Amino acid sequence: MTSPWIASLIAIFVWWFSTGAILVAVRRADRLGSHGMTTFMGLPLLAVGVWAVAASLHDASVFGVYVGFAGALAIWGWIELAFLAGVITGPMRDDCPPGLAGRDRFFRAFSTVAYHELALTIGLWGLVIASDGAENRIALAIYLVLFIARILAKLNLYYGVPRINTEFVPLRLNHLKSYFRRGPVTLAFPAAITILTTLLAVCAERLWTAGADVTVAGYALLTAMAGLALLEHWLMVVPLPDAKLWRWMLPPQKTMSKEER
Image (tube, rainbow, N blue to C red; front, side, top):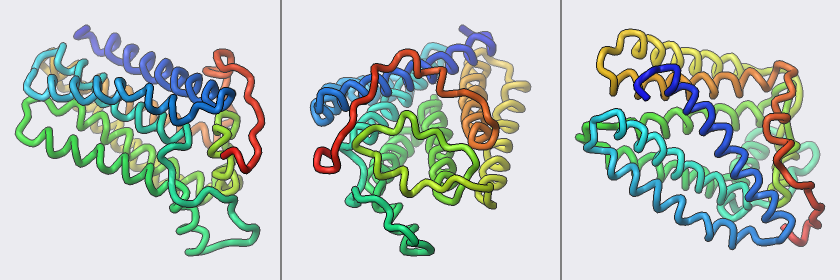
């Protein structure tokens, strides 16, 4: 698995499969009302992720790179599962009042995801501390790419983009739709594209000049993840049916009253 093409394909497949698995789990939780239990049952994923990251830190081999990559995604995946299940979100669970704007809208929107942002930040700092002096810091690098992309995506959904796919928004997060803004792009979009394109270019350049197999594998994974992050942002403006990637595997969604959230 030292080929950059194989590493990139692995990253793309894991991204697609893990996203689908989380969506299926959350959709099932919506239908059964088992959001807390779903998050609890996912704790082994978090534990395996922490173990994998710890095991990879001083394993400067190709295998160690893949273990660190998997560990970072497992940690990230559990936090996303907890968020989409409505367990780790924020203190605000109500819709955005009509006409709310400016700082009031921003802080109200932030309060809908504040605990989630805190969890992601704790995960990042945990990896920063654990990776200090480590031979293999791929887990930190992968998590950081995901972290940057997520922050930029949330800002663009808040400030406005032409295309917003709300099909997969879970029932317990239905109120978040009222904080999205569908419209012309703002300065947040070119800023995000510039940041992610630069990140992709840096990773690709390091991959191109990499010599050792372990370096090739690491930067191939990072390049693929940076490319996916950039693609996800372009899909906010380019009308492509990206939802079809996962729609076929999901059970029908039930409705939920406001009292059930």
